[in-house]
Image (cartoon, rainbow over all chains, first blue to last red; front, top):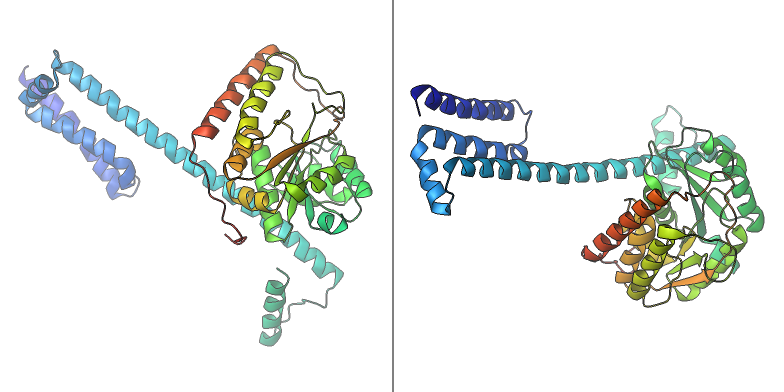
Length: 144
Length: 245
C-alpha cells in the first residue's frame, strides 16, 4: 500500500461521513435512516486509518483474503438498508391507504350533510351571529 | 327478516363499471326495497360514481385505486360508523344475483360469515386448469382453518355479521387476494364461524374472465403465497363488544 491509496481510503470515508452528517444536520435525513450509513462510514474510516485492523478482523473471523471481509460487510450493510426501506415503504403505503379511506368516508359524509341541508335549508342554516353558530355546530355533531 | 335487512349494508366495490353499476344498483333496490347500498368507487376514471348515484346508491369515492380489499375496508368502516350490523359484498358487474342476498343474510343468524358459493350445486360456473387447481387447494386449506367444508373460497359474494364487521373494519387485508384468502384466514383464526350457501352466478355484464394458462399459473402461485403468508402472520384479536375500537 502506498501513501496515495492510504490517503484515498481515508478521504473517501471522511467524505461519506461528512455527507451523511451534513444531511442529518439539514434535516434531509432522519436518524433512523442515517444510522446504517454512519456505521458504514465509521468502519471505513477506522479501516482506512489503521489498515492492520482489517487484517486482524479478517483473521478473527477466519476470512483468508481481508478484502473479502470488506465486500461482505458492504453487502450486509446495503442489504439491511434495503430491507429497512422496504419496511418503511410498506408502512407509508398503509398510511396512504388509510388516508384515502378516510377521505372517501368524509367525502360521503359531506355529501350526505349537503343533501340534508339542501332538502331542509332552515334546519342548519349558518347565520353571522354567534348564538346561531353554536346552534349549527351542535346540530352537526348531533346528526353523526 | 325485515329488521335484519334494514340493518344490512350492501357494499359494491366498483372500478370502471359505468356500463353495469346503475342497473345492478337498481336491481338490488327492486329486489330488496329500502336497503342501503354503498358503492365504493375504487378510483375509476369513468362515470361509475355518477351512474351509481343515478341508480340510488350512496357513493364513496376513493381518490385512487386501492383494490377490492381497500374498497371493502371503506365499506366496513362506513357500516361500523353508521350503525349497520351486517355487510353484504356484491360485485358491481352484475355477476351476483341480488335474489340470493336474502339467503346470505338469513345465514348470518348462525354464522359470522356466509359465502355465496358457486360450485355448491347451483348455477353453471366452471373454471379449468391451474385456476381450478388453485381454487381446490385454497378450498382444502381454508376448509381446514374454518372447520367446515368450503368449496368456493374465492367468491366475492359474501355476507358478514356484526362480529365480522367489527373485525374487518380494522383488519381487512388490502393486499392482492387479501379480500378473499387472507380475510377468511383472519376470520377463522379469530373464531368467527364461516358457512357457505349455494348461489348461482350469472355471466359478467362486461368483460371476460381470463383463461390464459400463464396468467392462471401466476394466479396459482400468488394465491399459494397469499395463503402461506396469511397462516404465518400472528392472529389478530377481536375486541368483543367494543364497536368504537
